[in-house]
Length: 403
Image (cartoon, helix red, strand yellow):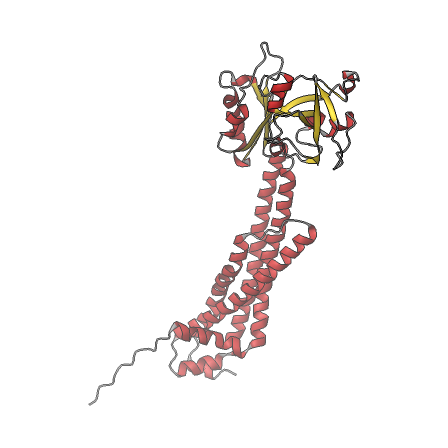
């Protein structure tokens, strides 16, 4: 008597499983398109609700940063006898603090400025003559309205830059190109005006000042070289730490005699805004993915019910339950992946376009762009588990007998 031979179950290669999974998409193109549209809308919503608020947040953060959220101002305590003198290299010492990004300084020369040597010096009362480092504007977020600011090449020469209000008081309203620049009388010397600053909300005292190069102040105004105010910009996450060590850095002998401004209230508002936006992102992203996953799951369940005859025929021809599960799970993942790609592209275009329309810097969080496709695949896997298991449990006789 001949012994029956045992037949091992057929093993499908990954390429075969992929072709079987795409079979339902190719044969039911309209339904596949609608299913992919559903998940793509969910992913596009995810990208949009993360990209547009992120762009708005970036614009708001830029506006708050312009209010000096990362800036500190240090100066000696006034009315001390003898006066507290900061080291001549105080700004350089502050710049060596690791989180500090910019450090600069000005110093009161106690000189008097006038429109000419023929007028009473009292006409310019209230205008300070300050020696300035060449990197001052970077430390106070300032800018030049006319002309140029002090540079290393002009630092030793009798040139000045006028603050916004000081220029109006001295009758210098603009610097027409091609014309002889005006001069002002500072101390006992004539100084050429090379620039006029815009108003500076972060340092309003500079609006009422005449800024002279550091070495020129030494040469012409008998300046002793000791700064009176040090401006510092630092990383926002370390601003409080910088504030604590700044007095001891500037004046190690008596740090208690150095006064440092507290961080701007705008910094606290900025941090609260970042937290609020982060919570909003997570909530909206979760809702968008949930809606997309439900849509794919519903489509796959309906697909199983409609294709019971196909499932029965494949089972009768030798397909195992594992083959059926792999087929429908692959189809679910392929549908979601296709929808994720389309949704990501659509969401990025809408978010960037709307940001450009509003004049915001376009920001697409990487977690949204890459997570859109990855999230769609994960959602497709989760949504396809139940339909694939249900399809694999159909017996060939029940499936073939389905109407």
